[in-house]
Length: 138
Image 1: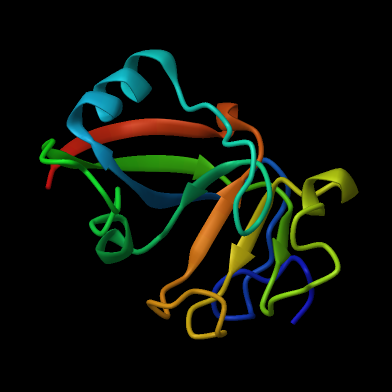
Image 2: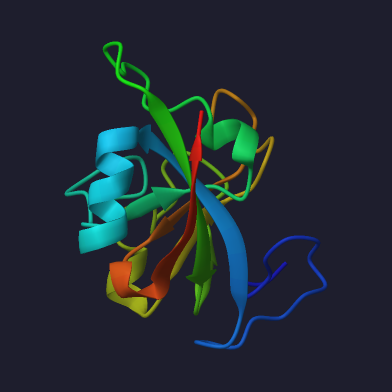
């Protein structure tokens, strides 16, 4: 599958045109702040800097890992994925630098061995590509 494949391998993405519903797990306080101020890109992570999301609501419901007793929430999002880079093994040459090579989103497919849950994960470099649709108490 080429770099523009996303999902079943038959879909083609056209930068700026394709949107997906995705989810982000956080605390209710953070969810309200994100809704009013927008996302901020993390400085690092498995895929480098960006906003970490998933098309799996189940995966998002597991976050944050340590809520410390705070009420958890899931943000339902509309995401313009743009140009997508598939990262399907640890140590991929573009694992943390995909955004420097013209990609808007990095995608880790389900069951590729990179995520312990076996669920897919996405990292969007530019937070302006993400729109909050709903806050779901978790």
